[in-house]
Amino acid sequence: MKNCLKFYIDGEWVAPNAPKTCDVVNPATEEVIGQIMLGNARDTDDAVSAANRAFAAYSTTTVNARIELLEAIQETYTKRYEEMVDTISSEMGAPKWLCKAAQAAMGPAHLGAVINVLKNYDFAENRGNVTLLREPIGVCGFITPWNWPINQIAC
Image 1 (cartoon, rainbow, N blue to C red):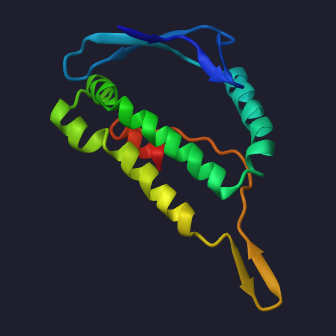
Image 2: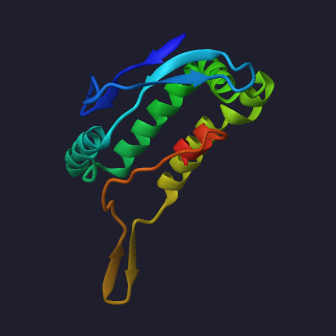
Image 3: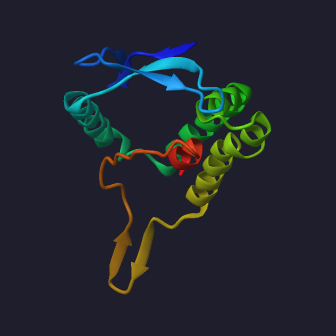
């Protein structure tokens, strides 16, 4: 059984402000396969504040540095591919063949697509007397559905 009882906030694993767990159930077998910690508004605020602090430095990184970071993530994901297949299969209740061929495959595929776009994207565009500059504007948050989790996260 895997348990995720801390949150990764501001570069470290931290306990939640108001500990409350939730069982992770394999929908195919109805077996409890782990526990996760549920966050509250204060945990969310802590994470958003940390992300905003990190954004100040990250937003000034070069495109090449971002590509290197994405390539490192892609490499680590690929090394842990079978673990991703097993985790997605048990958390979604999907057959392993589907997770291996499609679900888990979305991560490296989407990362590769983003890397290719970054290598060729024109962040500065001259329009007459002005230059249109596309740059990071801030932190975003999202909630992903359970049925295609890596697809949503990697996009």
